[in-house]
Image (tube, rainbow, N blue to C red; front, side, top):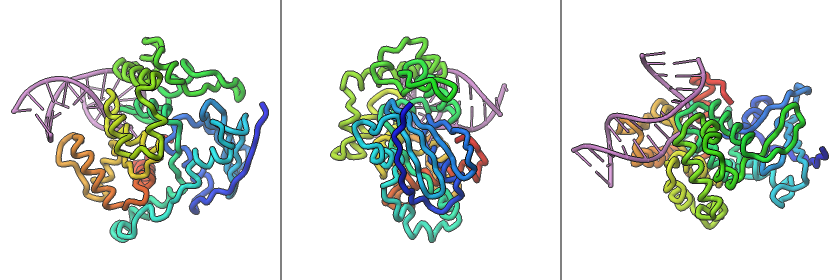
Length: 315
DNA sequence: CCCCAGGCAGCGC
DNA sequence: GCGCTGCATGGG
């Protein structure tokens, strides 16, 4: 397999190298860690847009290689920068007042400042987060992997086992019902929702490229998504943040809800997080953190909470 | 059998 | 319109 390669320096925050490399996984559910023969480097393989992208982080330099010199018609270097969010501003992610009010939390979150928000393929992001309802991350990754092996195009069989692209909307729209249910953690409702959304995308009724366009606002994109069954505010916010690059999105899941209460005394007035209370919490969190990049701030806090406070290791 | 997991939809007030 | 409850599944 012929590789085209390029290198670029990564302006990463000062953090242990292995930590920085690991954090590239961020919200991606389809990253595979490769064995690192060099202790100073960490290697990853990502499947993006039907191409296999191999990445290694070595000191301050990122090396990327791909079987083609461009992805989606873009030069590889440009694609990698965008996909990894390397060229996006990270100034003032927490506004000064936040740093002053919550110095402890601020220090903890900044330990994860090497983490970027991947800008993943919109359809893959959408379906992946539709699989993320009431299940743990390990199960999400399994579902996404199952979808790929059953309905995705075979890319190659190197590295021991076959690698598949994420399925196209058509493939999922016409998927065998029982197979799709098995892929969706045996959840028939989820399978039905995934099929319906895939069909809408395949028919052009739901145009993700339009939602991705700079002329489409965060709220317009969000409102378009939540009209579909199986997509609520949280999943729509994840797609907006991780698929469309909307920095003002602030997805609130069970972990975020926990740290908002624990650290900032922000809590829902209702037992369950109703849509109205969800929006209210979003607004108050944005007010606290600042408007520069709530989506990224949320991700750093998310990891600080999960790893250091709750001691969770998945990812 | 309990609780939890990167929530959502239906129903009743 | 808004909140409470049920739901659905696997894993610890």
